[in-house]
Image (tube, rainbow, N blue to C red; front, top):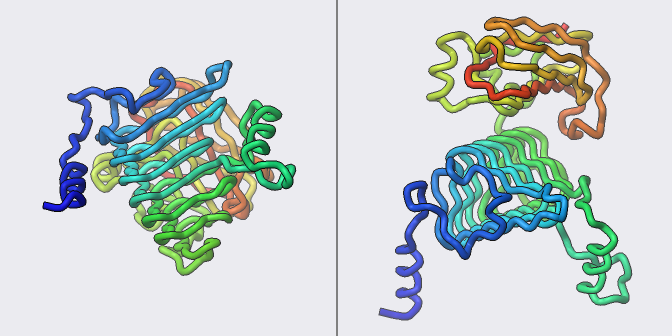
Length: 335
């Protein structure tokens, strides 16, 4: 047996860490700033998680339920950076996530995908060594640059060897081909490839209607973020006429109109719901009733809060300040 074959067999035989095994050092640094490890699906022992927050302790890494991390995955934050990886997302072998990165639920990362909000500095003082320019930048900027953050919405698929550059937004349902370098934003449900990325096709036409209904499969893309959309979950929540939701959700409707009306159901006394339309908070609904109907005004888009790919639509965000066990949206429409 050749040495190369022996190495491959050894790698394949590495055990997987599951909840029953516990999580073992030395692959974890700053574990007190890493949250959600008790609810992940699995993590290979060669994965490395590093959390080095600043003196204020604000940096963190957070995992949703049933996240999968493969061999040699690296996830790292420094200073006030934040990484969030949503439920049911999988990162296959060799993926690297660093900096300020948000990844939505149900995303699939093939091998060796990279998403980094940080980069080397070679233009600041071009006669200097790159490492010296990096050190000078770090010394002058104690906080992360918000504009460099990466935001990846739910249900995205990244092909092997693809890379996401700082400051990019990737819309819901996007497909990124193998070896693609993402340097510009991607709209929802587009298929991109190349270096730099360009649109090749679409999964479906993203055209939010004026009314969305929990019973209509064609409306599912517009229950945009934070909803329980697996077929098993839908089968349960639709029995009572809603799509189940988390504490933070986003709906996307047709642009224009004066008001948005939202119908839903929840357990009584769940706490205050805050509603924002187009990035501007417009209402608070304390102690929502078991069945509720809310009508809120439509405001102008605040560009800093809404990604460019969504600015032509009406974007509704609902955030609860309490843990929501049973909460769902039945319908929303704009008038």
